[in-house]
Amino acid sequence: MTRPELRIDETVFRRNLAVLRDRVEPSSLMLVVKDDAYGHGAGWAAETAVTAGVDWVGTYDIPTAVGLRDAIGSGPRLFAWATSADDEIAEALIAGVDLGVGSLAYLERVLAQSERVGARARIHLKIDTGLHRSGLSAGEWAHGLDRVLGHGGHANADLVGVWSHIAEASDEEDDAAHRRFLGAVDEAARAGASSPLTHLTASAATWARPELRGSLVRVGAFCYGIRSADGPELPGLAPIASLCARVEEVRDGEAVVGIGALDGIPSILAGRVDVGTPAGPRPLRAVELATVHVEAWPGAVPGDEVVLFGPGTRGESSATTLAESIDTVGEEILTRLASRVRRRHVS
Ligand SMILES: *Cc1c(COP(=O)(O)O)cnc(C)c1O
Image (cartoon, rainbow, N blue to C red; front, top):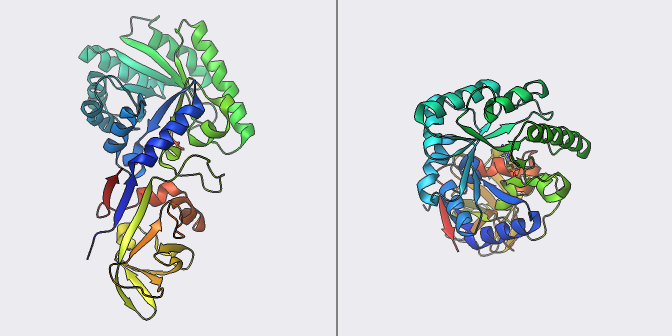
């Protein structure tokens, strides 16, 4: 029995980052590493990106950001936007983590913690531009700005950024969100903010809609070469990970491979996709708890390697192609992989 392996190619990751940095210039690239960098390893991803010149890392949660501070040093900025408990806020302020703030109640808690621990808060204030998930409403915006900029007291805080999140589903909706966003940025300038960073776009809009980019872009999926489900191919970007497992036995015209539902392979993939084998693509016939069954190929023997997804040339799918066959997204395939799947970083 060998453990299945997610083999992660650092060279391809660096190339993706270089392509993206080039494309978004003069905007800066923030690498998003939420969900353990979509299963690729947040520590590895952040450290690699920083040595490649990326100076913003977005984690979503505060503990991940605080945990990365020592590894990446004090220079690069860390951004955490999950609404968090007071003790976590305090740790973030001490570690110099930039905070995304999407409600007035959370803003008050951040300001209170910055007073308490005596550390200046670096705040990115979020305006709701139509998704209604989080963000200050248009009616709350002036008050939020006033609190951060300290007019109503002396806030121990800086307005480092103005940001929002868009659906990236239709250009019309995104354009309307962008207009609301620009209005909020103007209002911040009139309230006395000194050129805060602006950030609105994630992978899809960053790639395809340059006019929506702010001075910063937040990109997760595309850095790892995960294209959007039903989205276009991405010239210059490639998946950085291959999911590999070995044949354990060959019987009844099937290769039984040592990876299964317990490792995070969705059982409804059976009968819907091909996997890469030494002889090219072969149908995935069944998904059991600890194994998958693949149509055997001439000469199949135990120890042969099968690639469930990856950028290779033996007919393997990408994570997104697998996902499309069951109406989900590549991120979900990657983030479901169990910890028993060894992550191996190669260059
Ligand atoms: C996940 C996330 C991103 C990155 O999204 P991708 O589509 O993976 O690039 C950016 N911003 C926010 C707020 C997110 O939650």
